[in-house]
Image 1: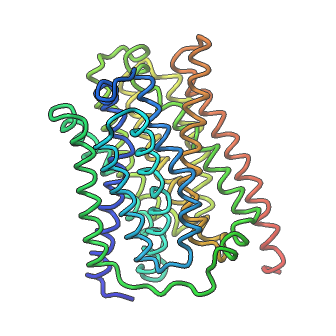
Image 2: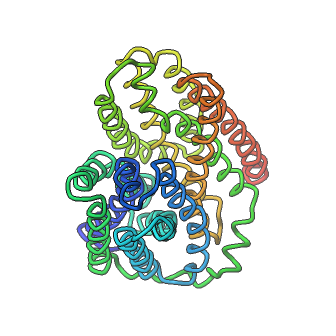
Amino acid sequence: MPPPRHALLATIALVVGGFAIGTTEFVTMGLLPDIAEGVSVSIPTAGHSISAYAAGVVVGAPLLAMLGATWPRKALLIGLTVAFVIGNIGTALAPDYNWLLVARFVAGMPHGAFFGVAALVAVDLAAKGQAGRAVSRVMLGIPIANVAGVPGATWLGQNYGWRTAYWLVAVLGLVTIGLLIAYIPHIERNLASTIKSELKGFATTQVALTLLVGAIGFGGMFAMASYIAPTVTDVTGLDASAVPIFLLAAGIGGLVGTPLAGRLAEWSVLRSITIGCVGMGINLVAFALTAQWWPTAIFFYFLSSVLAGILVVNLQLRLMQVAGQAQTLAAASNHAALNTANALGAWLGGIVIANGLGYTAPSWVGAGLSVLGAGVLGLSLLKHRADTRPATA
């Protein structure tokens, strides 16, 4: 195990990479009108670039993780970051809409694999019994990006042209590469890990159930969060200038929930996922019932982000527990599942709004998704008990 100072610097390198990825994932939402004008399309059409990034995550996470299963983890992290830099430079240079879509897809492909491999490296570097805290520290990059990186890059893009935001992200990627080279120790790859073994280990019931919990249960949060801007103005009755305050509250919630998730994981990963799923469902109902009052609206929006942090970290750890030889593929696929949840939640939320049910309706849909996710988790728990009972006896 590397000395504590080296482990800290390695963790910082991974967090900086997560910060860059979190910034590029969400900055497009704030710059959508500028991007639309820049590539001469409507704002809804430009919004497909957000979908292209999510599609890149869903496709790239399992594909790149599987192809990189035989690589040393340091080399794989560097390679993934190089691909990330290329995708963001391509975005900054995009001359037209079609180029933009391709570039965003490429930028999204390394997302899940990077976080998956980073989690595995963090566990390798962690002291015994501190795997949960190690993974939660690596995941801090995204909430830090929501608090600082996304607002900063959005301001830069609005004042100096939207392309500058992606140049900034590309530079952050280059900084990450330098930090990875300097501070990530060489960790011998698992010689038993091959593409065949990854696929075999991945094709288990518990891996499938855990991914379903993420893809369905986590969709509840996205159903509500995708439409927070019109909810704040039309239901809570605040000016549009209040929306960034809600987004800041969500970022702070992530900063609270992510390290809390690490502590809870060391108590029980399965109980922590249960708390996340059930708590999210209750929280979404509370938000739907009280969204007309700004103190409760902002509190329950903050709390949804805390619970989301608990779910992300513990689903990651659960996949690493049940994946056997498919560690790289399973860890990366967590983010593919979460981006599937993003698409599912936003789609279902849009349907109920389009049918005239109002802007609190997505929260009710989200509560239903959380219930379904908890149901899938219940099946996973039953199988877990059945699998462990003979060993206990």
